[in-house]
Image 1 (cartoon, rainbow, N blue to C red):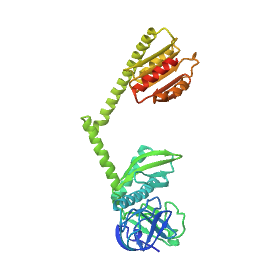
Image 2: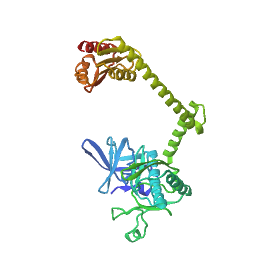
Image 3: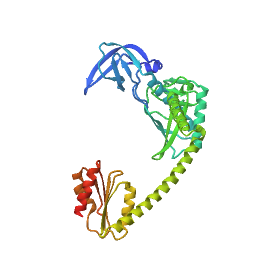
Image 4: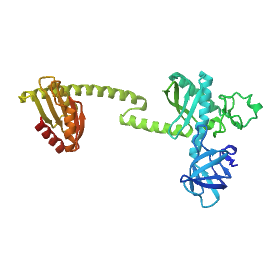
Length: 388
């Protein structure tokens, strides 16, 4: 049986050992070691990665009391030096301990139990049995959890016998009945857990709740801890500093500045929309006066699709039966008809547009298309105009 160094010596990140056996399965390479500090995936915690000799460790799993290491190749010697990705292990350890602490605080303050835990490279979450958690509650939970971190309380791990186990106030009963490993945050929490953990709460460094969201009938809490929290803060601080500099203001007043600009933008967009509607109305009137029939074909050199669409709607609201319009801005076409027309606009566009390297289609009364070359668009308009 492999000696599990990750329990006996949780701070080990490098050691020498011997390979027990190597085997290949489905084109993948696997091996077992006499001693390993590589933590196998389990308890919500991902597997460690690193190197065994010249081989990179891709995954680690525990199967029938064996720790199976998946590697990218077999090492050239059975006597190997092993090393773990120390930053990855620290990140997992800090977050796993932070999860225990956060779950204990949720139970202590608001009697909210934790139902599941996910530890990923980018996202760390717990799902808790509560339909919602208020911002005020989050602030209280976060404050209490960090107070426990500052207390630097000891974290103990041990295997109690059945008699001792019955007297331990476990936060959640384990599904197994033998070899139950307890992780105890002194005075705060007792949990059955197979993961790696820090030795004192102070090593968590910091716990920050990022956000909450509804997940079915529960609430999902996103959080970070330790070194990852520091990186998140540095990123947020740097971006906020850039934003403040860009708007020539302080970080504290940046939101006020952005809100003001947002109001100005909305006002400008409203004015622009009104101007587009006015211009579309004028051009629709001019187009109607310039033709004698019930069909209007026109190419706009300076209109965009929104203006073109407004003009088409106004024309069709009069006695015009068909409008075939194109615009250089965006290389779009619009073909539409009123209720009296028997022409199927969507079908007609779909039948002919591919011949001109365009894409499009639509309903019987309204269709549109797009092109990558202006010459193709103009050729399509000429073809459609002949058909009409």
